Length: 184
Ligand code: IMP
Ligand code: MG
Image (cartoon, rainbow, N blue to C red; front, side, top):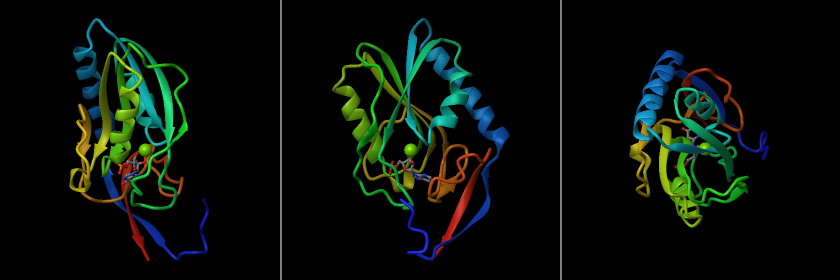
């Protein structure tokens, strides 16, 4: 949805929160941890579009296991920076997760509502196991508890963009994670 012109919000990048190297080092650590935890198993990753696409592309290359992956897209924030609490599937999985060791890959856990909904929906499809990896977590904003098994970084209550995360579909291609300031 494009509502430019309706609201006068000015946005500016305030500062870099996590630089490229810090992100890549942490992803290598998570990849090794996942490789150890699933040793001898085949892992099926499900990345949540679009935000997790960049994190997913990097983490799969740091996991030394036989893997397969799939994508799911859920209702996004559009221009808003607050969750409506409503989640809907915009693009469903291509393959059934039934009987698979599934790792759900997310960009950021904010209120927890998106993951809570997805975990409930995916469990109904009987994966053998289901765990969550999220690059970022904002614990201060949690409304509902979701067990996140692998967290890249816990961050303060700031709106961030880059490395897959957007504001109004922009900034996803920034190589690092930056704090966005919105002024109304
Ligand atoms: P939750 O349902 O509130 O946990 O929201 C999760 C989704 O909100 C994430 O997958 C992101 O798409 C979006 N989101 C939450 N916080 C941020 C942020 O700081 N920057 C960009 N997107 C965010
Ligand atoms: Mg997302």
